[in-house]
Image (cartoon, rainbow, N blue to C red; front, side, top):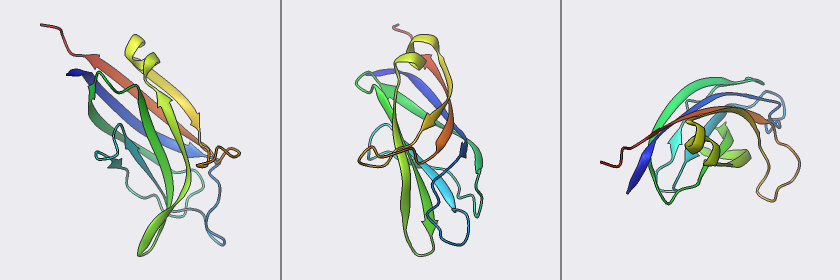
Length: 129
């Protein structure tokens, strides 16, 4: 059953851990509720503070309570290298209808900050009719 519609905007990033040795990262973001429905921003090349300002729409099933984001450094012809990821609770956006905050990225094992991503979300509840 669909609980509502979630609109997620990946705004920008700052202080991303550098995965390229001689240039800035070529960064993109994957955002998803479920592994089989990942959405991806465009790649911002050679930039230490990428701005995407891209919005993705999801139907939010009542079973999902988190959204996942992962930032990558794109490498030509290879799978991107993960810079860091975050899992964001949807409790606040479901209760208030909006969310606007910087989220700290960590590595798979929770090591130190890998940078921050600015996320905006709005939630529209589906009527119970």
